[in-house]
Image (cartoon, rainbow, N blue to C red; front, side, top):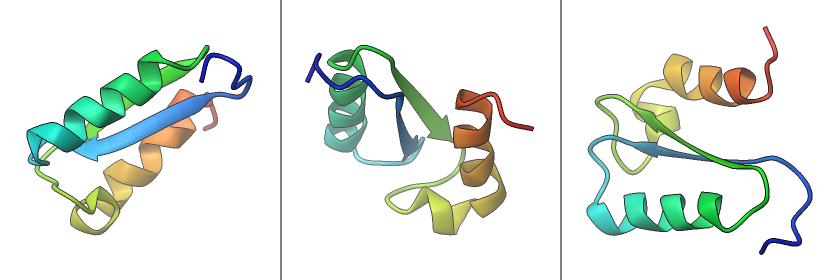
Amino acid sequence: MPSIAVPVCTISGTSDVPAQLALAGRLAQRTSSGHTATVSAAAYFPNVGSPSHFSAEPMSFLEIE
């Protein structure tokens, strides 16, 4: 995965299962410009549990306001 040359942002919920959080972290670490974000008080579908926080993460990662 180091050959992936685009920004990668994984987004998980803080209440997600440990295996999912670990997988997201490994994916971000294995890319050249990876980032891991967590959404508070959300689980498997952070986009449903906290849509405004979920939507803010990629915007922040890409520095878009």
